[in-house]
Length: 236
Image (cartoon, rainbow, N blue to C red; front, side, top):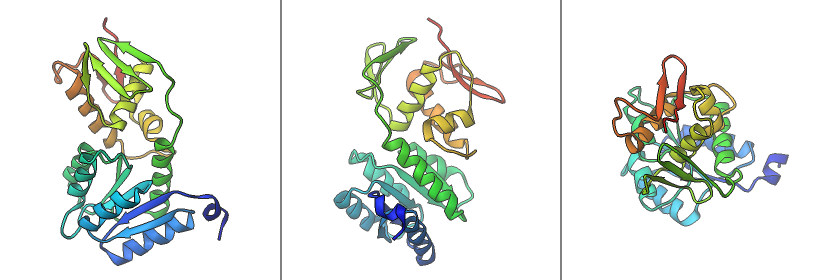
């Protein structure tokens, strides 16, 4: 047993029906000190996730019986906030965007590097288990975020956000009027130590605008800075 194995108590649920990929994931995660559980179809994944409550789920989209999209949607409907990294072999970005929209924390496209997957797992777990924000709030443009309670109000009306949407909004508001690149947001909110796929940032920005902007085509708060990234602009 190596040192990582001796100190790790994090459990990863691998949901993958391809035996070779499943074995590869299982081996590399165990080598990095994680405990693993395995499910080879969607229905088993729901049962294992509900009963065992893993710390993170690596979830393939193409599964027999119930696909990964439906598994992710079902888990989020059950109010399970377990971080989910989705795997897809499809070239079409539709699956990736849909996965993020229904609550996945990240995605990777096959074929992938086991080293990169492990880095993503570590980054997502770091974020999920990081220190909670202090007990205070931020108010800009009629929008108030309560950091400790993870709640948001717009002109007194309570809004609902996924954990990642909330964290992205908080980071933008804490750095109001400052332009932040996609890579900076990826590093701050998703805790990546490398330049990743910034599409995940764009998708979450779109979600935020849908919820806080009166006109998403002419946003007043979350502005796009072409060729660079985004900024939260204070106008009142």
